[in-house]
Image (cartoon, rainbow, N blue to C red; front, side, top):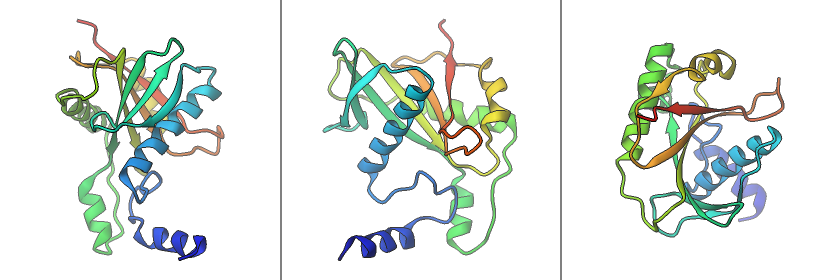
Length: 184
């Protein structure tokens, strides 16, 4: 199979709903998502991680190092409506119309679930959760003012959480928001 055939096969297998970050192989997808976040951060003048790689023992999904060489664990999760995904697989062209409250609740659930995992290869200087989304109505410009002030429940393991959006041509970047985690 040549490269063109492989690309056609990947496109055929791509899901029909919120598919921007939906890649074929899970570990490559997770690595690509974290790379995308790091590139987005670099464009924002934040360049704190290096030597990114797939973790040999999941979770975390990926490992990087900070400027001092300390290990950073990175866990990846998707913000998507699974029911809309199923309906689109069945040929129904639907999308989820999320409210701000539903988005915040769903983010809280994802953070809590990921924070409860047993992470391998510790100790990590910090654990970072990257939540990516390509949901049609979840918009960076709308969510930014809300999520910049909202504080999510204190976590036991995860020290930083980023919400990563698909490419935005208006800013020529993949916007992201660093979520606030309560310190108490």
